[in-house]
Image 1: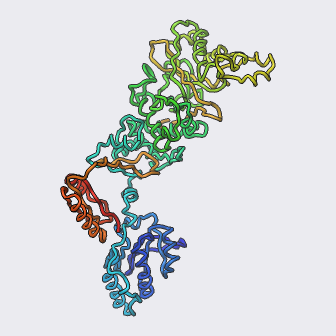
Image 2: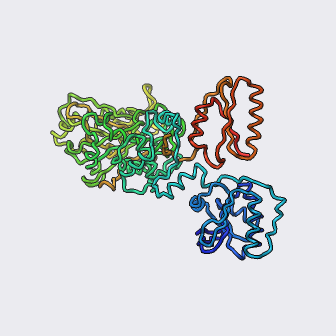
Image 3: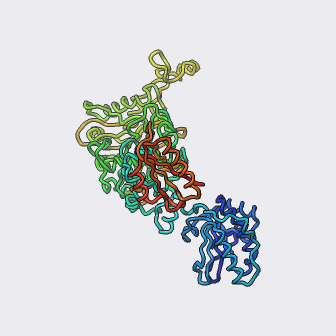
Length: 520
Length: 92
């Protein structure tokens, strides 16, 4: 069933002889034969149905306006009928028998064939021949390729007809080409080799999720590209993920594409920001993530490839590429990948996701926009919680610039030995935050531009303040809750870490946590 | 041949690399007729001109079975294996 320009349905039921003709408006041969079709319809249209099928909606409208045929031009802009009828060339005309099979098939325009068809119909129905000035028509016109065999469209049509879940454009890499070099040349990656996303590998990757491959997970700036589950799976293959990682990657893409996280700003800023993914919940063990020795470094497939997959989605689907909208002055190696799991079992405190409102057994991805780090906070000497949290504060004062207060937030990764020191004194995360704010508090008069550095309050602003206002102390972070605390790392070593944030709050990026629904 | 799925939002055609341009035409030049009308006329003329101006080269003629479909793999491989240059008569 197809509809015409007025949305009226037309059926080919194969119960009576019919003329079925496929045309495409931008094909000169189709335009040339349309008056012939009109004449045939005028002569025989009352005796047998004419189903003229056009391949573009706008083109059909133009053909109808120009030739004013007595028949409707049916809309096959989805090209499903053209594909099902295996049309290679337009025009292709079928005279179908009463049982629906093709009695005659005319491809392109061969004048003798068309004239023979007209004579045949006139003889069959015992009516006058069609009014066609045959001698004025060319002897032969080859026609044009059917849109349904256009290489850009045919694969999609084939996948649909085979009920394949894959819809992405297929790219053929010639056997003489090296697929790894080809992908480098196409700019599909981050500068490291990529696993070729063959249909077979993408199908295996899709087995990692129950979600519909064509579900649009997010719309990613700057291109506002639609990140379908399939597109995310393709990039996950390239990044080296295993299928069971896919739900984490999908959830992370959802999280970074929220208004609160603001991936566009995070990518576009000259400051060099990038998402850090923190994974909480039972999924950490299920995927074999590293949360212990070297948790923030290389060597673990799940950590490395999930973070990389998210970055590739942003680059390929969103179109954020260095030199385009990604404008980082220095860049940042964390732009390759940055994903780790919290060692919840080693922590005496509520893990990050529980603090942020989830249940302990939920699997959760938290994304944080970082510009620096992980910066090591070295303290092998403090033996009290107060001293150690004080050290963390002093180290964190360098975020952005020691004189820049209230500008950013931080994600702190406390190592187990430091955890023990803090917990021996019974310190909560709130105690740690308060101490950090306490030791970083400076009177505003110390934060005014001076001969050492012009960063901070402007002199003109300070001049307008009272002595009391200048004595007011400002901590490093606007809110205690801008200090996010996690636990990871090996049992040995007194080296905690901190990611320094980007512009925080509504003008910049706020951390976002999302539950991995499929795994929770 | 390997097929991969496009990881991008598909807004731009896949860029194909242009082969390096040699300074001189030597060896075998393939002329490919895609089987559109009068493509052979154009290629006949080209063959004559090439043979006249570059007497050292060999010209080989090929044809696609139909203009509506991409060249079969075997034909592409044959042209690649037998030729150094390719001129294709497109459209009509």
